[in-house]
Image (tube, rainbow, N blue to C red; front, top):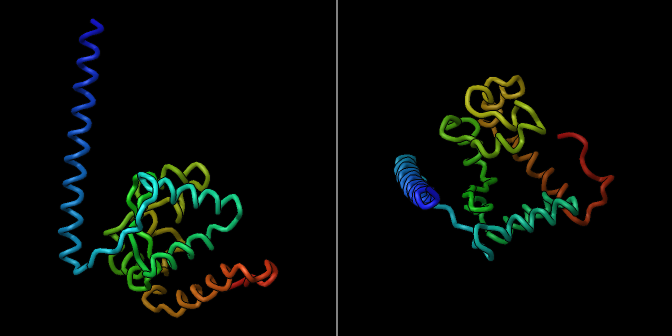
Length: 183
């Protein structure tokens, strides 16, 4: 009986590994085909010092404890010397961007091609509930705060102004009392 259990466990692990590999390959092929259809170029990848991007997670955790996450994110963008890049975060691939055309594509023009993903929804839902930071698709799109968002992102003056304020807020030489109170 115990021998059979060990065999079943090995078969289950092997089946899961095969399933994971097939899903990964199919997902990669789908994204590659979609990228080619949209004329996307591959973004550079942030090199990991530790496996699965654990170093990035540790750096962000350290910045969080020091209340300096925005400065850490800006440091990473400056280190990468680009507006968009790929990164691994505990083995989960993510895309980081502040390129206005990419932000516009995500929020206005190709909204339905992007999602937060189940992992993010599950991580933030207990703390934030259902709302603009945890919803995807139609639920996000019809949230009252977002009803006029796509129109706003077609005109990037507000976004560029917010970016300028973001840069001033993240300047480590500024005293806290000089942070802007409105956009």
